[in-house]
Length: 542
Image (tube, rainbow, N blue to C red; front, side, top):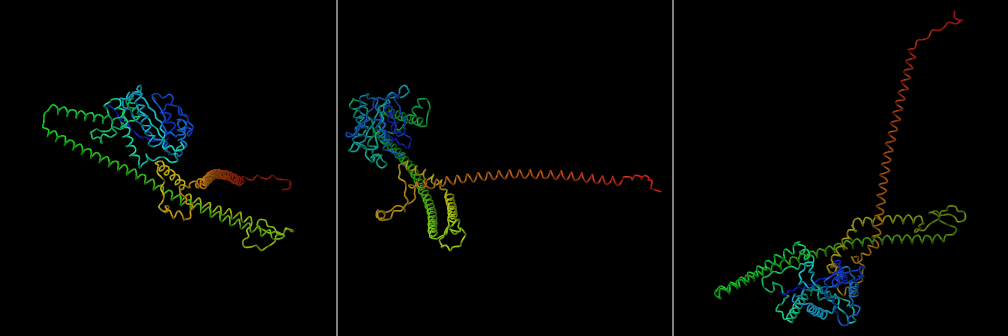
């Protein structure tokens, strides 16, 4: 039985993919990717049956080389989330041989070039029978550029929009029908009675359920004996389809064996058709409702991202306005006192025999200190330096408070993250209603510099260095605090050691004083209790 498979895929840089790598894999060649500076070598890949590049007649010859073609695409599509190429993935009926497969592929690719004016890089892959693949699984990968070829033979400045969000569904439907027609023409040419249809089982009304495309990874796991959610679901669908076919065949057999009235058969068939129709309508309604809910949830999530972007952008704008107003005010004040200093110097230069040092005036000849009437604007160099330091300190304190209160680092990080998320979906960044202007307002209004996501380079250039200085200053303060704590600990230890020594000395002195007192008391008692010695007589006593 002839099979039908036709799918459309996108090759995008936001998914981490490379057009050069994809082309090298599909052609089984070695290509050098200039964008990533990496060699993509798939020369050991087996099963590449046929490759060819199809292009408009006036195409630049350099673009007919696979290496130059896809490196040029990588260069032209220079955004980080660029859509590099699109791809048709098709399956060939098993009734076709190699020559007939190539003819069918050429017809499809030439039609693709004719309709959209693009360059097509196609390859037929044979099934990996040794890996457990079905020997009928001949398929083709058809990569084509997102830009048409211009009259000069190079890529157009703008992409063609036939596969865009607005036109994509109808374009894909048309190509599915075109491929089905080409397959049926080829089957008829070889005398086969088999035919294929691009319509789904639901559109055909045969009551069968469609299976989900399993892809390379699920197929490999199935060959290893590992079931996945997709493979289990597909097996169940195939079993139900087979049971339905058997039931239909059984009904047909009974119709042939049992004679019943034509009226009864018609009634049964009408009831069955009505039942199937209601079931199909109910299933379709449920599917549409589910799709609408998914789309609603998806759109709601997108709207939340857009609202978050605008809120973060407003917070950044408010911060940037306050920050640069503060900086401008500081610069204006510094400029004013600088002009005041210059005026003071000019005034001093006109005073004869007078010079000034550290705000004191001296006679140029005698070098004696003198008193002189100065103008109101007088400002000495010493006073200027003091004022400048005080101004720098005041405004630095204001800036630090502004940065801390606005939490600007987190705001900018989240703003960039949200913007990247929106851009990766291929959407334009939202704009505030008050920023939208009519044509005449744009034409005659004076253009103002408005801080927004587009001006984040100002943040990187002016604010980030200040944040780094604040961080370094904070680290120094923390280190000073640690050193102060360490000194306090050492002082406390030294104080305790000193107090202990004092107590020890005091204790020793008390013991020594006690011992000395005891000795004095003992000496006094001994003296008091000592018996007087008798005196000896001398010659002078009578």
